[in-house]
Figure 1 (cartoon, rainbow, N blue to C red):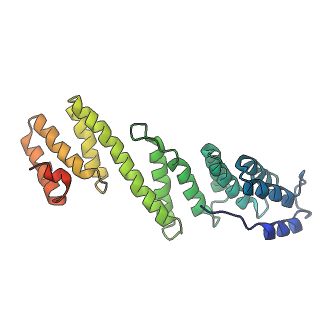
Figure 2: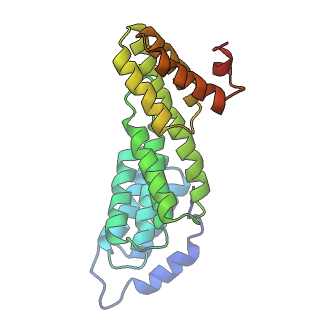
Figure 3: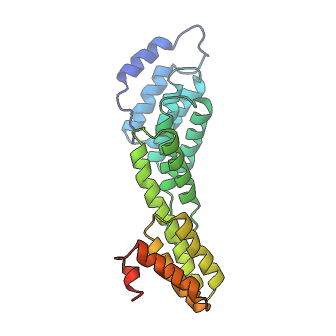
Length: 240
């Protein structure tokens, strides 16, 4: 995660900017708010730090330090486990500073807010879909970003997670002999998540499902596909 711990020089510059003629009159100088915010952050009082950083941004929205304040507010919320607050701060950042140099990091942080909320495979996978979309967008927009490689790793993990969720549901369908639903779910893995570890099992279970409903040609098609693409896989061995 990106951390802004070197702030003494920032405060000195802020102090020089705090009293300009065009500055909106506020209750506290920007340098004082920043000093308090970073002190709270370094003491791991993340909720208080987030409030102070947001105060700096809202009281001095035209300051060149306003984007940094929003980034730190989002990160403070994240460190506090307040993912909803972090997402709101990233939304505000993207709305007012879409061309800022920290956009890749903000997108990554937003993705991590969803990623950290990904639940057990048996539960509703909404957060995984949001996280996947965010990381994929980051990779597409900023492929050379320092966060792109980490985002790619998260994408692979999330795709496998989502495929695992689908497989879990398909297995339950098969236990209940709900073959149409099981086949539909398994085919979605083969077509939409073929790079995941669930694909060999999906092909094996499609062989089982089509055999169960009396369609041997379709079953043989998936059996042959499994043997061709995954000759040494454990699910291929089960065909023998």
